[in-house]
Each structure stands twice: as structure tokens, then as C-alpha cells.
Image (cartoon, rainbow, N blue to C red; front, side):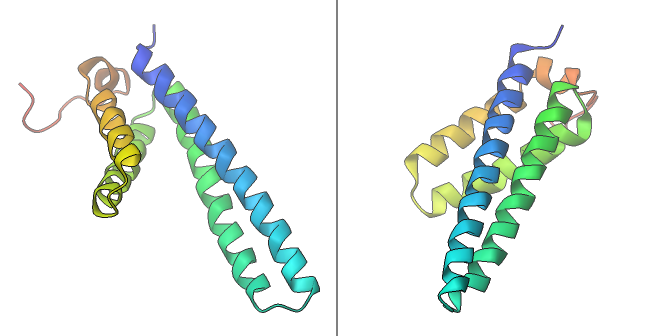
Length: 125
């Protein structure tokens, strides 16, 4: 039986991946419109859309990995959330900071860590 934390994190990652893919499609559409009117920002929009596409695919992969309790997905989610939480603190984004802390706390719960096959975290006894 999967811990509830794994299910919640998988759904959050899936939602994030879908939102990133929708964002990529929107930015590419904007880039196409800018390119048609010969605006130099069209290329920048395409490039930004490519970055959003990569993030979207990454989050979908993490959602799949977490749902199937893969350790690589736990590490990826932990690293991405840690970086996003620090950036939220630096930019004074209260919602991002709170959400990041909640996700980190869920990731660090023993049932979640053990379900992903991680046997040792320094400092845990």
C-alpha cells in the first residue's frame, strides 16, 4: 500500500507537469504570432516555450516515478522543491515558501522515504 504522501506528491507533480505543458503551448503560440509580425521576441518566446516543455516532461516523469515509488523520483522532487523553496524565500513569495515547506515535510516523512526505497538519510535515527 502506497503512503498517502506519495499519492499527494504524485498528483501535485502531475498537475505541475500539465500546467507547464499548457504554458509551453501558450508561449509557443505567442512566439508564432510575434514571428509572423517579425518581432525579434518571437525567437525568445520559442526558447522559453522549450524550457517550459522540458520542465513539463520532467514533472510528468517525476509523477510517474513517485507513483511507482522510484528513488530517483524522490531525489528529483526533493532537489527541485528545495531550490524552489529557497528561491521563494529570496523573492519573498509567501505562498511558494509555504507550499515548498509542506512538500519537503511530506517528502521527509519516514513512510514516504521508505516507500521510495531510500534506506538511510544522515541524521535520522
